[in-house]
Amino acid sequence: MRGRHLDGARHRPMLIAHISDLHIRPPGQPAHRVSDTYARSARALQAVASLDPRPDLLLISGDLADRGLPEEYAHLRALLAGLDLPVLMLPGNHDVRAAMIAGLDLGPHAHTGDGFVQFLADLGGLRLIGLDTLVPGQSAGALCETRLAFLEEALATAGERPVVIAMHHPPFDSGIAHMDRIRLIEGADRFRAIVGRHAGIERILCGHHHRPIQARFAGTMAQIAPSVSHQVTLDLAPDALATIQMEPPAYHLHSYRPQTGLVTHTAYVERFPGPFSFVRAAEAT
Image (cartoon, rainbow, N blue to C red; front, top):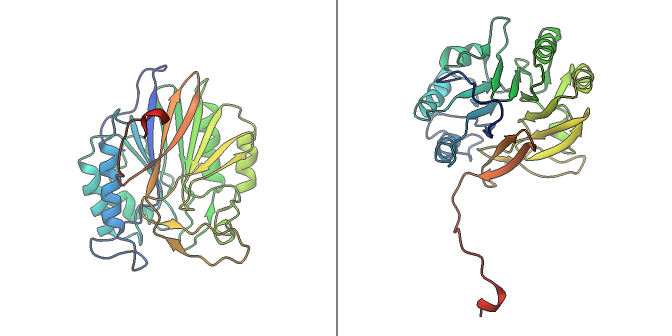
């Protein structure tokens, strides 16, 4: 996380911008030959920086780089440098931990001493727990005993704070078969059991699937953010091919108030015509 420590009044409204799956490549080198992920990520970060009110935090839930190359993290670091926002980051299956740690300022809330890239932070009245689900060389995710122990300790010390858990790989099936085969696999049952024992978990925030998806999970709500690069094709056929679509890049804005909990909005990176005033039918002629 860049910049200052997270703190803030326990009872004031908080705003979290959540982007995922940047897949940054060097400028001029599109991912999958069609997705200019550097330019799209730059526009997404600028859109977040231009929000009014400004977010209290930017959360990036994995696949920061496309190939885990040092130069990709250098480009991301440069893009983040002008934001002046606290940032919490997690690896995805496209990331390389060593290059990520060396190339980015992960900030004071990062936990990297056990070989993983995780975080623990308190934002106003919320506790934020970031879990590393990366398995090097594999597309599917895992939570081993070490990472699950980190989760349990962070939950045990949360007190009365509502908890938001962030991770790259979703722990539930979405109906997009080829993505469900590479969701969180190892440790998924243990994770579900841990979540089910803690009533204070407000939300589980994920990436990986490149689509906005929500589901009830172990007594709480789990949701997947869309990608700020390209989207996975929405195809619920069991034998659907793994393809991407150049749908509008988007991200989530999570607004937290103690009286309402977390309320999520889907925001689009690109600008569209408007805003226009509402016109009553009698005035429309």
